[in-house]
Image (cartoon, rainbow over all chains, first blue to last red; front, side, top):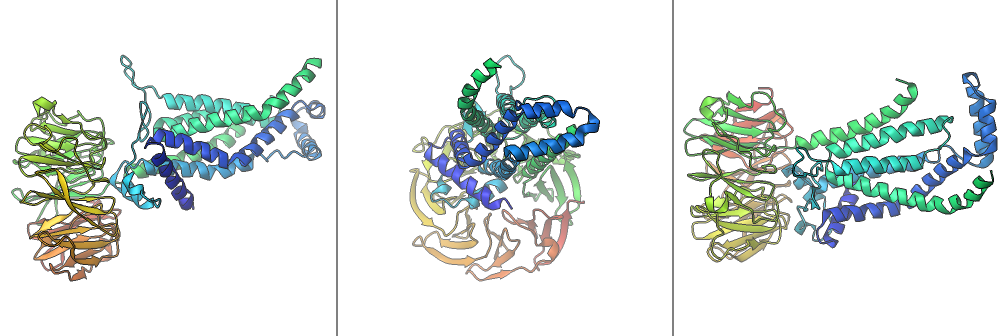
Amino acid sequence: MFEPIIDAFTNVLVFIYGLVFQNFGLAIIIFTILVRLVTYPLNAQQMKSAKAMQDLQSNPKWKQMQQKYKGKENREKLAQEQMKLYQELGISPFAGCLPTIIQIPLLIAMYWAVTRALAATPLQLLDFSRDLWIPGAANLVPLHSQFLWMDLGQPERLLIPGIPFGIPVLAILVMITSYFQSRMMTPANPNDQGAQMGKMMNIYMPLLMAYISYIYAGGLALYFVTSNILSIAQYYFMRRPKTQQALPAQGVK
Amino acid sequence: MKKKHLTILLPLILISMFLSACGSAVAAASWPGVNFDEGRGLIYLAYNQHVVALRVDDGVQVWKYPAEPQSTFLVFSAPQLTADGQVVIGTYGNELFKLNPDNSGIPAPGWPFKGASNRYIGSALVLDEAILAPNSDGRLYAVDLDGQLAWPGKGGIFGGSQGPLWTQPVTDGEVVFVPSLDHKLYALDAASGEEAQGWAGGLDLGSAIIGQPALSGDGLLYASTLDSVLVTVDTQRGEVVSSFATQGPLWSGPALIEGMLYVGDLDGMLYAFDVNGNGGAEWTLDLGSAVTGPPVLFNELLYVVTEGGQLYSISLDGRQSEVPLLEAYQGAKYGSPLVAGDYLLVSLVNSEVVLFALDATGRVAWQYSLAQ
């Protein structure tokens, strides 16, 4: 199902690799930026939706509703009222999910593109060499997987003299950036069920991403870090003007 | 655990399992490597997590090393033999083993050699007093028969390659030719490890060299490249003297048999060249599926296998016929068949049967399967 996307990703990645002096780390970073640009409308919609959900937390009607329908026995009624308010304000609580779901195939394709490109066994290299259809690609194979201190084809560890184990720098960076990214997009109200789910995601998602980065090729972790940083930057710039406008109002209150 | 936690954790675990499944599939992608010790009458089969010794007459397993699978013992190449029949094999776990065939394959004292920093993919070249092992870290390790680094002047290592070394080197007895995935062919003095005269920095062939080159007795070397070019190199001067463009990429190295050069490409074309001819192909055959290893000569016929699962017998003047195989023997075939005494050995991947032996009449004499 993902084969055409993986093939396209692999070839674009190799094409970029050829352009950036056969530096696979740079190729992954540039490729990630391109993917983010292509998926910008989806990301923007997701962030807009997250922002709308966050703004909703300070809506007086929303707060009144939370007070009025306290307790387990009113949970169903509260949900009905919340849905009415969503409709009234033109907010879809699931609008942020669709872009995320659409991006899952891209994530999987990226995983496979990096894995294929850094072929570590004869069968992998055989498959990889046949997947390439861009002119002159045979001259680029195999790709150089070294980037800074990392071998992007191996799980990344920074070896420091005197320390008996390698430090998984990229996995740590993935965990930190994933945490900030998901925290920025989580509604703040601790009483809201969605916000509680979001808080749990803030914990589990960074841990899962860090675990994947710890055990899989460093190239994938580099993609995660770059993608997270771009996402944080995009969200920061999207919300900044409105945040500034909102500040006086908060002060008056 | 609360229901809410489960709602979040389950999809995350599923994603994690999906990626884990991808990872294990990658790690198991090995294909069989086979060698034959005529003196002991044993075949050595290296595949996935074991090296097994089989009797050539009936395929019965004599020993298996390691007895139980070990995560670091994953093999990708054909075992090589020292003069006294010790079995040399490098692993995906960065270790080079010398297995003792007279002691159930248990490594000789001082082994494995653990000096490499990456995986062994290609077979080692065994000389009289040293084992030259190409490694994915781009270095060629020269190890003596006791497991210590040889070539004192070079610290036991040739590190001139800018890319992984996946291919078994070849030697004319004095000079060792080392193909590299960095597109270059290097030539080293076999005794000292110093670069041979006229070969400083290696010879750039334009694309990765994956198949083992063939050496002729008159100072010519034939190498195939992934960029679909078969080149002829003058080994004295370190220069390319001619080249031939094939239809598809060349994964397989060429085979030099009775004055003819044979090579197959990934498009399934098999080419035959007269080494004393005008450089053009004497004949070509379309085998319909990728060829990843050179043909071998068995009973006056060439035998070659394809990724599509076929086994072809070809007369020396280029008449092909497909050897009919039962379904159990029709799996994908990589590399080359091997002639072992009166038998032609053919290996399979992704199949219950890993190896089978054909006798001179073309009948399957025995088979070895994973269940054994």
